Length: 289
Image (cartoon, rainbow, N blue to C red; front, side, top):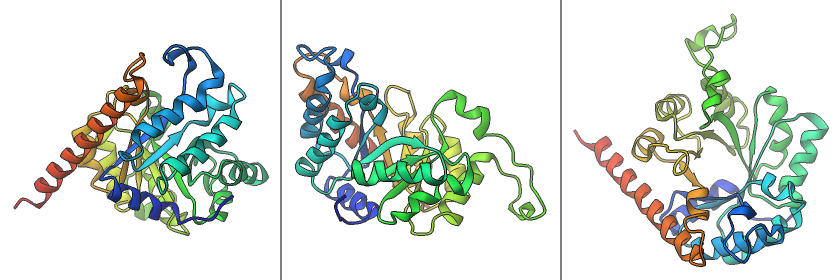
């Protein structure tokens, strides 16, 4: 594990330097690699490193998904990839997408895996078991945590939008849904070191507005733009600053041919500029009398 600036500082510096709120997810699927790498699990690093090389000046973060590496026994390639990001895109933080949700000694091991073995700057985590599922990661106050809150998948509504039944101790909070309680806890009560952000999907911009009412300053990691069809304009208006918009497949697989690197760069630039355009439009609308 190396020493570096806190995640929030790195992210804000990278966002300003690259004029970008774009986070590129690194979810390598060998079946979608261009020839001659197609179906070759030994090329995960090569494919992702080429994407990093092409987009290093266009992003505010990278988000490798651990399952795409672990399923193929390729954790070593993930370690190489993180080291490559450090070299090729210095100062651009790495968010390890693992959605860990255990407690106690097991969660401590997950924290060691993310922050010591893979040397990630931030990690996605699940709050289903409450503070106990978050606390072991707070022992790394310089690393960021993105707590699953209102996710982009359709099934997220099965639990996340359930109304909360209040007790005498919580009756002062008024009507709230489960994802709003998660946002409140993660951004306030559990946020001991100011390191916590929230995962909020672009497929639910109205719910992002509700999250912002509860947690106006929390960084939001927003998946769902691109292949999942989230509304970019509505998402940016709802998020109101302090956000990272993730795109994975739309960048990684912008082309299936030998021009995949150039195509990935074009798509990343297009997305970055589109996000900026919507952010400027939202700011003008907010400041209008």
